[in-house]
Length: 223
Image (cartoon, rainbow, N blue to C red):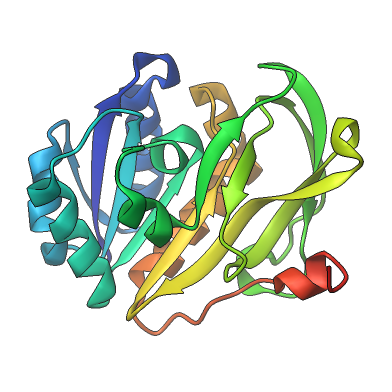
């Protein structure tokens, strides 16, 4: 049974506590033990869990709060999350961004933009998934080319630039999963999105998990 810590707060626009409720119900239905916190000091106990889910858009974090999370992931726990809750958090912490593998830059078109999410097939994390359309924020991010890509989307207004939507990566002995979807609880609760993210959280919790996804060369044709 995976032990999960969800730390929620930051910008209210992402409704972090409603997102945490959705995650908690889903993960508990899968047999996980879930602890929720609204205090960044909870990260100091990261090593007590199998996976930590940052759910805290923007905000500031003290070094003695973020360092235990970084250390715990380096030593073998997992970290997993979505959208701004993990990919636009603690902007002043370069080491946190290095660990997560990406940082939000912009969402051209704002909320409600319709776009396709293209699934990278051939991995257990994407098994049974098909490409799908969403109407929500479309994240353009600065990303780590070391990651392994599980889903992408194209920015037609930027010469068709392809941007990862979901990925995995290793961080020393630990495992990282991220999905840029999740601007609002109704997007998080879409069944195939929630199932995908739950798979990612459980993947990150498992010390025997190997990174999954296509390399940058495969996704971008060697560019």
